[in-house]
Image 1 (cartoon, rainbow, N blue to C red):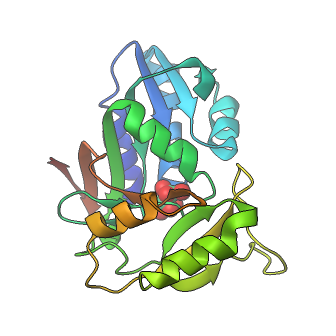
Image 2: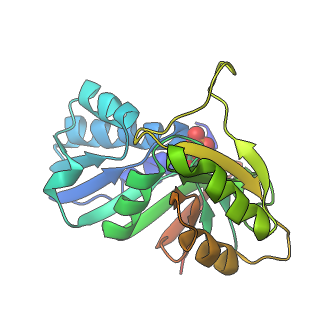
Image 3: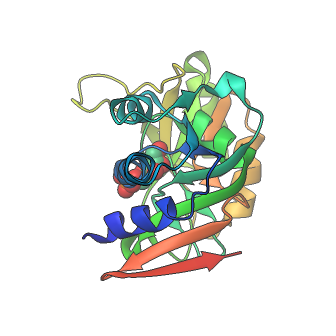
Length: 225
Ligand code: 5RP
C-alpha cells in the first residue's frame, strides 16, 4: 500500500456513524473517497458526503456515496483533504486544483479538518516549493497583480493544462501563481492577500487544520494542534 493510500485509510477509519463528511479534491482526496465508500459498502457505515469539486462529486457518485450540496449545510462534522505544503504549525498551501473557494469554505465549516499528506509535503515555510495560487476576478486581474507586485509578488496568470489558454476555476476566476519574498511570514501574506481588492480566494489555509496525518515509508503519524 502506498503512503497516500495509508493516510486515506487512516482518515476513513476516523469517520463515525451519522457523520456529514466533506470530500476534498486531488489524488489523496480521491483515495479517501474510495476508502470511505468501501467502509460504507462493507461495514454499513452511515455517512453523508459533501463535495468540494465537480471531480470529487463524480467520484463519490460513481461509488454510491450519498451527497448533499454546499447550499444545504452550514457545518460539517469532518472535512478531509490533501495539501501541497504543510508547515510545522499546520499552516497549509493548497489550490493546485481549481476549487479553492469551496475547499476553504468547507475547511472552515468543519468541526474537524483532517489534512492527508506524505513526507514530501512537509516544508519549513509556505511558498518553499510552490507559488501561492491566488484566484482573481477576471476583469480585475491586472489591478490585483499590480497590488501584489507592490508587496513584492512575482508571477503571472496560470495557463491551462494544454498551455494554449488560461486556467479558469470552477467559479470562473483566473489564477495568479505568485512567489513572495521568503522574509514575509504566512500570517503577513494571508492578511495582505485577504485585503487585496479583486482577490476572490487564495491557497494559504491558516489556522484551519485540526490534524495533519502524515505517512512516511509505510508509517502513519497524526499531528494535532
Ligand atoms: C487541490 C488541492 C490538493 O489537495 C492538493 O493539490 C494536493 O493534491 P494531491 O493529493 O493530488 O497531492 O489543494 O486544490
